[in-house]
Length: 281
Image (cartoon, rainbow, N blue to C red; front, side, top):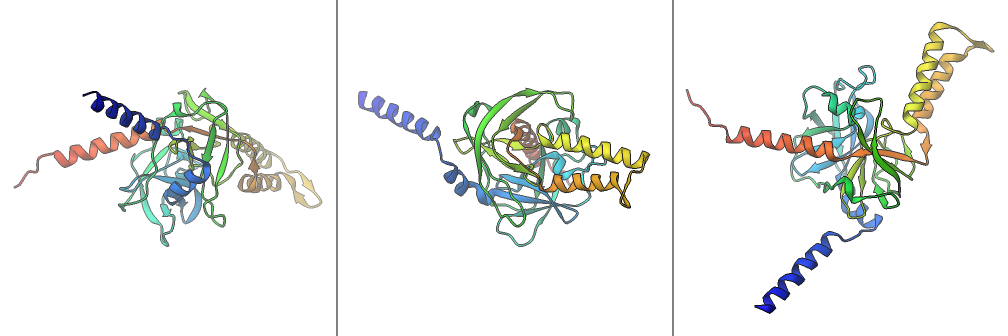
């Protein structure tokens, strides 16, 4: 009996230790790069996403698949997902038919593509990381393939943003982020996705948006001619170019919790539909 108890204790301890194994950024990258996807809106690259389940559930940032004109409250008309290693993108359907306020607030969207047996990423918990812990970020970008980024947690905690009234669990990390990385997964050192990259919540993007709006307003209200050039709209275009190419030394992201909630609710809904009695006329 004692031998059985000792053996059981050893097995439990071994499984627990394995579950908490810390992985290197290289190990996390190699295990998960095939689960990274590119999001295209109206045939233009819009951002990064990742496969959350093998049945074609895709997670990304809400602003990647919605329009600026609607303040990110209406989906773009044509959303496609390019799976790593595939030649043709898949049409994607948002799980939520309309964009709810929560989705905007947490800047998180969940899509579905008609594909199965896909390489999926393991979703973890916000509490897996703390200030000073190492993170791995795997974005996607045309021309760059699937790059590997790594950095430390600079800060984390609930924050009030301009996207909604609810506090958002926000993480600030020391790693370069540029346009197109939004929607990328943020991994803990256990190899679990604990967050989603978005600079709409915190970082350089809100400041750039504010400058762009000021310049756009000034170009409509006044004309500043310098050497034959209308200065205000030219500066607006410059800001747009910077937004496409600026690389920051710090990034930010939001908690994966909202995406997990939406995925769980969708799975429950599918089970109810499958178990519903079929009527015959």
